[in-house]
Image 1 (tube, helix red, strand yellow):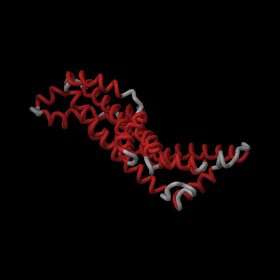
Image 2 (cartoon, rainbow, N blue to C red; image 1 turned 180 degrees about the horizontal axis):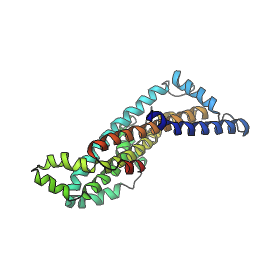
Image 3 (tube, one colour; image 1 turned 45 degrees about the vertical axis):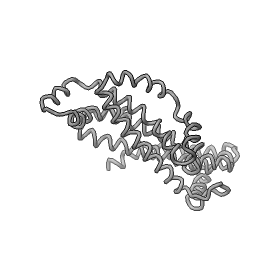
Image 4 (spheres, helix red, strand yellow; image 1 turned 30 degrees about the vertical axis):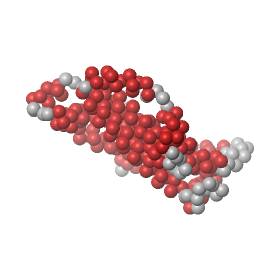
Length: 267
């Protein structure tokens, strides 16, 4: 019941947008080839899902492109998150070392991940690796800095608890530090997830021969606005679903380890 109520507002919002879109397409006087109606976009989605895009340079269907994107995203985001959290926990506990690492991080962090695409394509070729590398770069630095900040701002009482129980370094890290800072890390993971999904599509638009980003460019080259919009809408819906999934994971983890669930939801 709670799940149905949670979906009520999004479904109403989407229905209103689709209705306005249909009215504009019907009475706005636009060229249907340039501004297709929802019905034309739905027909294009069916075409992509069953036969693939007509006139495309690839005979793959939408589901093949979706699986390619999902594989790259899962690998890139998982490796990025794990590496960022582990490095962040270590650097947070070693502030002197972080003093040397931070200038390098601050030098690389402002560079948009997509700016690395030409270099990555030249060194790694066209395919999965450049897109995975872009996802890694997009998600690594925000999560790393958030983890370091969470560890450094951890109340001193946690150190006292670790000493009182005689925990060694690894036990302190896994049983005290990580559960204590996870609510702060969770917000950065959700933000990084959206960023990684955005840059996955961007990377595939120039550095891949398959995937949803490639399909966007393919639809543009075929001058198929309906197929392009169908792909863009699917990208947005997947991003929305991923955010809901991560929020559910946050709730479960915060219930286990504690934290302010409401503040995380607002974040």
